[in-house]
Image (cartoon, rainbow, N blue to C red; front, side, top):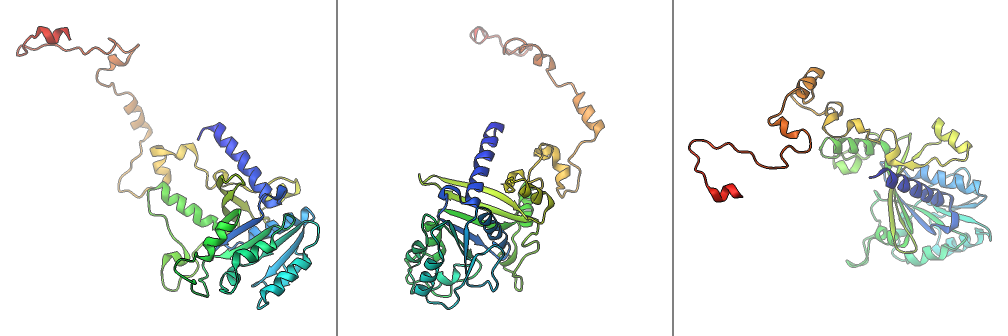
Length: 330
């Protein structure tokens, strides 16, 4: 990608993630966060709540699996085993006239209820002053079978209803997969994807350095934006200093120092540094490189100047060659 295009993409998509995290201009009425055992959505939700408090937004937290109200939550609603009409009225009562942020710690319980119209229920909770941020655990199977073979999976329906989708990934896993791609090896899998008995969570899950976000954003025009970001943990000293200065801490994944590929490591020049397993050395020593540069190539004179004879083919006839006037004219 050209430097000008890369800079334009960087500035545009960083502005977009900032608008989404700060909920400016009603950028996303329904934000869906898809997490897994390999990377929890809790750091991302925590950052969302932190920014909501900075903008003096009331945070309503609907809990199905959280026992204690997280930091920064104004109203904590325990929803376990509560009828949906009762829950709906309680949320409507808690939502004030000002700016609100409605957070669901999981939608798996709601998606698993066959008696509930999922799209109607969620639509009734969203308003111009109350956007919805909801988490879906993709590793938890449905507690009920689908009503029919033609019914969409609840996750498919949630993706269709949402205006922004964030999928969380572990930084350790993303770096390992990128390293394998760079060496033309099969990408490693982790956790349940390994399909090994007894393994539920892979090594390097929930990296404490931060969370990798895969974003899919749908504009009102229907145009989609797909981008990868890295959201560092606030425990990191650099991130803390940027927050104190009011700067955006989310960066493009391509700009992460451990993910970004330096020009010296591109192609075959960096094959020794990549560490390809081989029984022989594919690199060159300094003496071999000098000797190669000193080799005079065949017909080297033809490469000088402006192309030598202008592309004509020079051929010396031998004794056994027959002279043909027609071919000589050509």
